[in-house]
Length: 343
Image 1 (cartoon, rainbow, N blue to C red):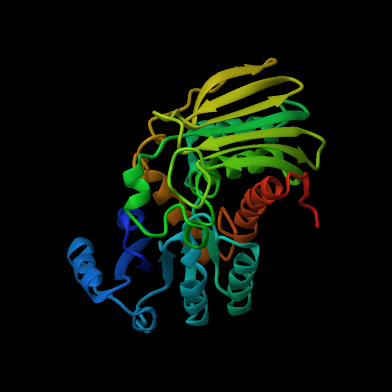
Image 2 (image 1 turned 60 degrees about the vertical axis):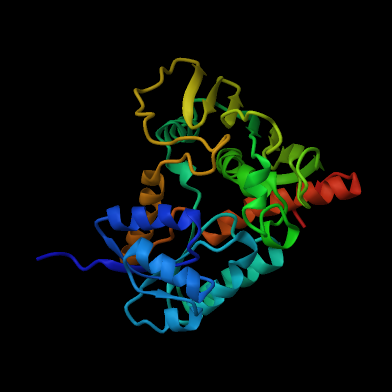
Protein backbone atom coordinates (compact mmCIF):
# COMPACT_ATOMS: atom_id res chain seq x y z
CA UNK A 1 0.00 0.00 0.00
CA UNK A 2 1.39 3.40 -1.02
CA UNK A 3 2.26 5.70 1.87
CA UNK A 4 0.22 8.91 2.12
CA UNK A 5 2.23 11.92 0.96
CA UNK A 6 2.27 15.28 2.70
CA UNK A 7 0.68 17.88 0.44
CA UNK A 8 2.71 21.02 -0.18
CA UNK A 9 1.62 24.39 -1.50
CA UNK A 10 3.97 27.21 -2.53
CA UNK A 11 3.38 30.93 -1.90
CA UNK A 12 5.47 33.03 -4.29
CA UNK A 13 6.21 31.88 -7.82
CA UNK A 14 9.54 33.54 -8.65
CA UNK A 15 12.71 31.70 -9.65
CA UNK A 16 13.33 29.92 -6.32
CA UNK A 17 9.80 28.47 -6.35
CA UNK A 18 10.86 26.27 -9.26
CA UNK A 19 13.61 24.79 -7.09
CA UNK A 20 11.07 24.04 -4.36
CA UNK A 21 8.60 22.51 -6.80
CA UNK A 22 11.26 20.23 -8.25
CA UNK A 23 12.37 19.15 -4.78
CA UNK A 24 8.79 18.54 -3.56
CA UNK A 25 7.98 16.39 -6.59
CA UNK A 26 11.24 14.43 -6.24
CA UNK A 27 10.63 13.66 -2.57
CA UNK A 28 8.85 10.35 -1.97
CA UNK A 29 6.97 11.74 1.01
CA UNK A 30 5.53 14.88 -0.57
CA UNK A 31 3.56 16.20 -3.50
CA UNK A 32 2.80 19.68 -4.84
CA UNK A 33 -0.93 20.44 -4.83
CA UNK A 34 -1.15 24.20 -5.35
CA UNK A 35 0.66 27.52 -5.74
CA UNK A 36 -0.19 31.15 -4.93
CA UNK A 37 1.11 34.16 -6.83
CA UNK A 38 0.82 37.92 -6.40
CA UNK A 39 -1.64 38.63 -9.22
CA UNK A 40 -4.26 36.93 -11.39
CA UNK A 41 -1.97 37.12 -14.44
CA UNK A 42 1.01 35.64 -12.58
CA UNK A 43 -1.24 32.92 -11.14
CA UNK A 44 -2.33 31.91 -14.65
CA UNK A 45 1.30 31.63 -15.75
CA UNK A 46 2.14 29.67 -12.59
CA UNK A 47 -0.70 27.22 -13.19
CA UNK A 48 0.75 26.46 -16.63
CA UNK A 49 4.29 26.20 -15.30
CA UNK A 50 3.62 23.99 -12.26
CA UNK A 51 0.55 22.07 -13.54
CA UNK A 52 -1.35 22.52 -10.27
CA UNK A 53 -4.18 24.87 -9.23
CA UNK A 54 -2.96 28.44 -8.79
CA UNK A 55 -4.40 31.28 -6.71
CA UNK A 56 -3.84 35.02 -6.46
CA UNK A 57 -5.32 35.25 -2.94
CA UNK A 58 -3.44 33.82 0.04
CA UNK A 59 -6.70 33.36 1.97
CA UNK A 60 -8.30 31.35 -0.86
CA UNK A 61 -5.11 29.35 -1.29
CA UNK A 62 -5.00 28.47 2.43
CA UNK A 63 -8.71 27.64 2.49
CA UNK A 64 -7.79 24.65 0.33
CA UNK A 65 -8.11 21.80 2.83
CA UNK A 66 -5.68 19.66 0.84
CA UNK A 67 -2.56 21.56 1.96
CA UNK A 68 -0.45 20.26 4.87
CA UNK A 69 2.72 22.32 4.39
CA UNK A 70 3.27 25.78 2.92
CA UNK A 71 6.61 26.64 1.30
CA UNK A 72 7.02 30.42 1.40
CA UNK A 73 9.08 31.73 -1.51
CA UNK A 74 8.10 35.40 -1.43
CA UNK A 75 10.80 38.06 -1.14
CA UNK A 76 12.57 38.33 2.21
CA UNK A 77 10.60 41.30 3.56
CA UNK A 78 7.31 39.58 2.74
CA UNK A 79 7.70 36.36 4.69
CA UNK A 80 5.84 37.42 7.82
CA UNK A 81 2.36 38.13 6.46
CA UNK A 82 1.81 34.87 4.53
CA UNK A 83 3.45 32.94 7.38
CA UNK A 84 1.01 34.43 9.90
CA UNK A 85 -1.91 33.42 7.67
CA UNK A 86 -0.50 29.93 7.14
CA UNK A 87 0.12 29.36 10.85
CA UNK A 88 -3.40 30.59 11.69
CA UNK A 89 -4.74 28.07 9.15
CA UNK A 90 -2.80 25.26 10.87
CA UNK A 91 -0.29 24.72 8.06
CA UNK A 92 3.32 23.77 8.70
CA UNK A 93 5.79 26.22 7.14
CA UNK A 94 9.02 25.76 5.18
CA UNK A 95 10.47 29.22 4.62
CA UNK A 96 13.17 30.51 2.29
CA UNK A 97 16.14 32.29 3.85
CA UNK A 98 16.57 34.74 5.52
CA UNK A 99 13.75 34.25 8.00
CA UNK A 100 12.80 37.96 7.67
CA UNK A 101 14.44 41.39 7.45
CA UNK A 102 14.12 42.54 11.08
CA UNK A 103 14.29 40.78 14.43
CA UNK A 104 10.83 42.10 15.37
CA UNK A 105 9.28 40.52 12.27
CA UNK A 106 11.26 37.29 12.76
CA UNK A 107 10.17 37.04 16.40
CA UNK A 108 6.52 37.61 15.48
CA UNK A 109 6.75 34.86 12.87
CA UNK A 110 8.39 32.38 15.25
CA UNK A 111 5.88 33.14 18.02
CA UNK A 112 2.92 32.68 15.65
CA UNK A 113 4.12 29.21 14.65
CA UNK A 114 4.71 28.22 18.27
CA UNK A 115 1.27 29.47 19.29
CA UNK A 116 -0.41 27.60 16.41
CA UNK A 117 1.55 24.41 17.14
CA UNK A 118 2.94 24.16 13.59
CA UNK A 119 6.47 23.29 12.50
CA UNK A 120 8.69 26.08 11.15
CA UNK A 121 11.67 25.11 9.00
CA UNK A 122 13.98 27.53 7.21
CA UNK A 123 15.89 26.77 4.00
CA UNK A 124 19.66 26.75 4.48
CA UNK A 125 20.38 23.95 2.06
CA UNK A 126 24.17 24.33 2.14
CA UNK A 127 24.15 22.56 5.50
CA UNK A 128 23.55 19.38 3.48
CA UNK A 129 26.58 19.62 1.20
CA UNK A 130 28.70 16.49 1.74
CA UNK A 131 31.92 18.44 2.34
CA UNK A 132 30.28 20.57 5.01
CA UNK A 133 28.78 17.53 6.73
CA UNK A 134 32.24 15.92 6.85
CA UNK A 135 33.73 19.10 8.36
CA UNK A 136 30.95 19.37 10.95
CA UNK A 137 31.43 15.72 11.97
CA UNK A 138 35.17 16.28 12.46
CA UNK A 139 34.52 19.37 14.62
CA UNK A 140 31.81 17.63 16.66
CA UNK A 141 34.09 14.67 17.35
CA UNK A 142 36.84 17.02 18.55
CA UNK A 143 39.36 16.29 15.82
CA UNK A 144 40.17 20.00 15.34
CA UNK A 145 40.42 20.57 19.08
CA UNK A 146 39.55 23.97 20.49
CA UNK A 147 38.22 26.22 17.72
CA UNK A 148 40.29 29.36 17.22
CA UNK A 149 39.16 31.11 14.04
CA UNK A 150 36.38 30.88 11.50
CA UNK A 151 36.27 32.85 8.27
CA UNK A 152 33.45 33.22 5.77
CA UNK A 153 34.14 34.82 2.39
CA UNK A 154 31.25 35.34 -0.02
CA UNK A 155 33.00 37.52 -2.60
CA UNK A 156 30.41 37.31 -5.33
CA UNK A 157 29.21 39.35 -8.28
CA UNK A 158 25.78 40.34 -9.56
CA UNK A 159 25.38 42.41 -12.72
CA UNK A 160 23.02 45.42 -12.75
CA UNK A 161 20.29 43.36 -14.44
CA UNK A 162 20.01 41.23 -11.31
CA UNK A 163 18.95 44.21 -9.21
CA UNK A 164 16.83 45.71 -11.99
CA UNK A 165 14.88 42.47 -12.45
CA UNK A 166 12.77 42.92 -9.29
CA UNK A 167 11.73 46.09 -7.46
CA UNK A 168 12.54 44.58 -4.03
CA UNK A 169 16.13 43.44 -4.68
CA UNK A 170 18.73 45.51 -2.88
CA UNK A 171 16.10 47.49 -0.95
CA UNK A 172 15.94 47.82 2.81
CA UNK A 173 12.22 47.01 3.08
CA UNK A 174 12.20 44.14 0.58
CA UNK A 175 15.67 42.62 0.93
CA UNK A 176 16.71 43.88 4.35
CA UNK A 177 19.95 45.11 2.80
CA UNK A 178 21.75 43.34 -0.02
CA UNK A 179 24.97 41.32 -0.28
CA UNK A 180 25.24 40.01 3.29
CA UNK A 181 21.58 39.36 4.12
CA UNK A 182 20.69 37.88 0.72
CA UNK A 183 23.79 36.21 -0.71
CA UNK A 184 26.10 36.00 2.31
CA UNK A 185 23.57 34.61 4.77
CA UNK A 186 24.08 31.00 3.64
CA UNK A 187 27.80 30.89 4.47
CA UNK A 188 27.29 33.03 7.59
CA UNK A 189 24.78 30.39 8.74
CA UNK A 190 27.44 27.69 8.27
CA UNK A 191 30.01 29.77 10.15
CA UNK A 192 27.66 30.08 13.14
CA UNK A 193 26.62 26.43 12.96
CA UNK A 194 30.28 25.47 13.44
CA UNK A 195 31.62 28.28 15.65
CA UNK A 196 28.62 28.79 17.94
CA UNK A 197 27.05 31.86 19.46
CA UNK A 198 28.55 35.27 18.55
CA UNK A 199 28.93 37.75 21.41
CA UNK A 200 29.82 40.91 19.52
CA UNK A 201 30.64 42.20 16.04
CA UNK A 202 32.36 45.14 14.40
CA UNK A 203 31.49 45.62 10.74
CA UNK A 204 31.65 48.02 7.84
CA UNK A 205 29.44 47.96 4.75
CA UNK A 206 29.55 50.05 1.58
CA UNK A 207 27.59 50.53 -1.63
CA UNK A 208 30.40 50.86 -4.16
CA UNK A 209 29.19 49.77 -7.60
CA UNK A 210 25.44 49.14 -7.77
CA UNK A 211 22.67 51.73 -7.62
CA UNK A 212 20.89 50.12 -4.64
CA UNK A 213 19.90 51.00 -1.06
CA UNK A 214 21.67 48.01 0.45
CA UNK A 215 25.36 47.16 0.52
CA UNK A 216 27.35 45.52 -2.27
CA UNK A 217 30.47 45.19 -0.08
CA UNK A 218 30.91 44.30 3.58
CA UNK A 219 33.46 43.09 6.12
CA UNK A 220 33.20 42.14 9.81
CA UNK A 221 35.14 40.84 12.80
CA UNK A 222 33.18 38.56 15.14
CA UNK A 223 33.86 37.62 18.78
CA UNK A 224 32.38 34.24 19.69
CA UNK A 225 31.15 33.13 23.12
CA UNK A 226 33.90 30.49 23.17
CA UNK A 227 36.62 33.12 22.84
CA UNK A 228 37.29 32.29 19.20
CA UNK A 229 37.39 34.97 16.52
CA UNK A 230 35.72 35.17 13.13
CA UNK A 231 35.94 37.23 9.98
CA UNK A 232 33.35 37.80 7.27
CA UNK A 233 33.78 39.36 3.85
CA UNK A 234 31.03 39.57 1.28
CA UNK A 235 29.89 41.44 -1.78
CA UNK A 236 27.98 41.46 -5.03
CA UNK A 237 30.37 43.95 -6.64
CA UNK A 238 33.44 41.71 -6.79
CA UNK A 239 33.66 40.82 -10.48
CA UNK A 240 33.61 38.13 -11.75
CA UNK A 241 32.68 36.47 -8.43
CA UNK A 242 34.63 33.79 -6.55
CA UNK A 243 33.19 30.60 -5.04
CA UNK A 244 32.27 31.12 -1.39
CA UNK A 245 34.82 29.92 1.18
CA UNK A 246 34.47 28.68 4.73
CA UNK A 247 37.71 28.25 6.71
CA UNK A 248 37.72 26.66 10.15
CA UNK A 249 40.91 26.68 12.26
CA UNK A 250 41.38 24.72 15.47
CA UNK A 251 44.35 23.94 17.70
CA UNK A 252 44.81 20.59 15.91
CA UNK A 253 44.43 21.75 12.31
CA UNK A 254 42.23 23.41 9.76
CA UNK A 255 39.73 22.66 7.02
CA UNK A 256 38.80 24.88 4.07
CA UNK A 257 35.66 24.53 1.97
CA UNK A 258 35.21 26.23 -1.38
CA UNK A 259 31.69 26.13 -2.86
CA UNK A 260 31.04 23.41 -0.28
CA UNK A 261 33.92 21.23 -1.44
CA UNK A 262 36.86 20.38 0.81
CA UNK A 263 39.94 22.00 -0.74
CA UNK A 264 42.24 21.88 2.30
CA UNK A 265 42.34 19.27 5.06
CA UNK A 266 45.18 19.67 7.56
CA UNK A 267 44.06 17.80 10.68
CA UNK A 268 46.53 16.03 13.00
CA UNK A 269 46.17 12.26 12.73
CA UNK A 270 43.00 12.34 10.63
CA UNK A 271 42.76 11.84 6.89
CA UNK A 272 39.68 13.12 5.06
CA UNK A 273 37.11 10.55 4.08
CA UNK A 274 36.13 10.19 0.44
CA UNK A 275 33.34 12.72 -0.12
CA UNK A 276 30.96 12.95 -3.07
CA UNK A 277 31.28 16.61 -4.04
CA UNK A 278 28.95 16.37 -7.03
CA UNK A 279 26.02 17.76 -5.03
CA UNK A 280 26.19 21.49 -4.57
CA UNK A 281 27.08 24.32 -6.90
CA UNK A 282 27.87 27.95 -6.14
CA UNK A 283 25.91 31.13 -6.78
CA UNK A 284 29.10 33.18 -7.18
CA UNK A 285 27.89 34.83 -10.39
CA UNK A 286 24.57 33.04 -11.11
CA UNK A 287 21.95 32.86 -8.33
CA UNK A 288 20.35 29.74 -9.82
CA UNK A 289 23.57 27.74 -10.23
CA UNK A 290 22.63 25.50 -7.31
CA UNK A 291 21.54 21.87 -7.10
CA UNK A 292 17.86 21.17 -6.37
CA UNK A 293 18.88 18.01 -4.49
CA UNK A 294 19.94 20.14 -1.52
CA UNK A 295 16.42 21.58 -1.35
CA UNK A 296 15.16 18.02 -1.71
CA UNK A 297 17.07 17.12 1.43
CA UNK A 298 15.35 19.90 3.36
CA UNK A 299 11.92 18.95 2.02
CA UNK A 300 12.55 15.38 3.17
CA UNK A 301 13.74 16.67 6.54
CA UNK A 302 10.52 18.71 6.88
CA UNK A 303 8.40 15.67 6.05
CA UNK A 304 10.29 13.62 8.66
CA UNK A 305 9.98 16.38 11.27
CA UNK A 306 6.20 16.51 10.84
CA UNK A 307 5.66 12.75 10.78
CA UNK A 308 8.07 12.03 13.64
CA UNK A 309 7.20 15.04 15.82
CA UNK A 310 10.71 16.48 15.91
CA UNK A 311 12.29 19.85 15.06
CA UNK A 312 13.28 20.56 11.44
CA UNK A 313 16.99 20.66 10.64
CA UNK A 314 16.98 24.49 10.68
CA UNK A 315 14.49 25.99 13.11
CA UNK A 316 13.23 29.55 13.30
CA UNK A 317 15.59 30.12 16.22
CA UNK A 318 18.57 28.90 14.17
CA UNK A 319 17.66 31.25 11.32
CA UNK A 320 17.19 34.17 13.71
CA UNK A 321 20.82 33.86 14.83
CA UNK A 322 22.29 34.57 11.39
CA UNK A 323 19.83 37.43 10.90
CA UNK A 324 20.83 38.97 14.24
CA UNK A 325 24.52 38.85 13.31
CA UNK A 326 23.98 40.45 9.91
CA UNK A 327 21.77 43.19 11.36
CA UNK A 328 24.49 43.69 13.98
CA UNK A 329 27.02 44.28 11.17
CA UNK A 330 24.71 46.88 9.61
CA UNK A 331 24.21 48.56 13.01
CA UNK A 332 27.96 48.55 13.65
CA UNK A 333 28.67 50.18 10.30
CA UNK A 334 26.08 52.93 10.86
CA UNK A 335 27.41 53.75 14.36
CA UNK A 336 31.08 52.85 13.77
CA UNK A 337 30.96 50.84 17.00
CA UNK A 338 31.40 47.28 18.24
CA UNK A 339 27.88 45.87 18.73
CA UNK A 340 27.00 43.65 21.71
CA UNK A 341 24.88 40.74 20.42
CA UNK A 342 24.06 39.30 23.84
CA UNK A 343 21.45 41.93 24.75
